[in-house]
Image: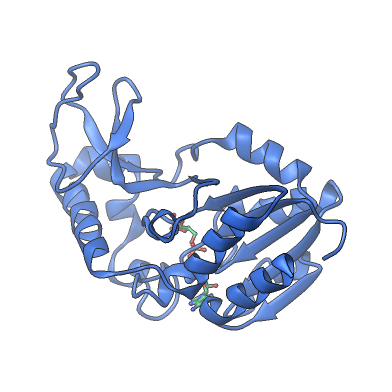
Length: 232
Ligand code: APR
């Protein structure tokens, strides 16, 4: 990987699978046990706020019993030791990257441990449960909701992400099925602007054909190997 100084890493549910956080698609995935229309759309939140809030309260509580795995730890090491630019963009709403020590990162699909005020847009750290009708500290509206980007909503930080993807020399996708846009399109943007592209995933994905190189295996094995190569 000579000549690389600016890296963008995109992560998805597969990087947290070995920590025991369920992925979305495939056997045992979250979308097998729930209809995403019932818990992950603005309409669902309006129709049944109790159900939607409870779904995310339960997932937030479940974070207490999981821990970062070797892949999160390796990316945090890359963040600490990589002398060039780096941005880790995660689609995950768990907090395992930051618990491993990653700092140069953002959550494009929101965070379980954050609330969002539907009235003023304030996002802030959240511990414990979030009942419907909770009041915003900033604007006093009874409008706090989980800070989760629902289907049909704009992901967070898109301007910064698009600039980073267009400017990187190496784009690496880890543990994501490439089924959800806009994240699924980042590889093509990165390639268009001349970046090298690498996919690390357990299975072939819908996006595999767009990568210069695809390595198949568990993130807990492949990510530490790749980080070792980058820092050698
Ligand atoms: N190591 C590497 N990859 C893995 C592992 C593992 N141990 N386990 C599973 N995978 C791969 C699967 O093969 C699959 O390709 O991770 C991918 C997970 O795909 P999804 O479940 O679709 O998760 P993700 O790509 O993050 O989903 C994107 O969809 O509904 C949503 O908003 C949600 O952010 C999420 C988005």
